[in-house]
Image (cartoon, rainbow, N blue to C red):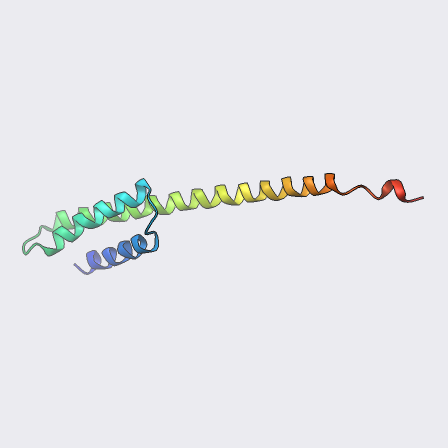
Length: 102
């Protein structure tokens, strides 16, 4: 039960941190969180159902983490590409001083 509550706390914190954002990974976390909450409030629950729900929620959170890593990598790459492009454009705008030196 302690593991379930801890996992719920972490998942709910992630949902709050990403409120206003809509993506399939967050939606899965919402579904899995609701399922685990349902199990916790039941007076009689089965251990295997609880373990499965915890595992499913952990998996959904892992999928979100992987998606965020992918997006971060894409942003890093596009940021680097934008800097290179900006540097090239700046070089083209500035005339070379080579032709003035003699």
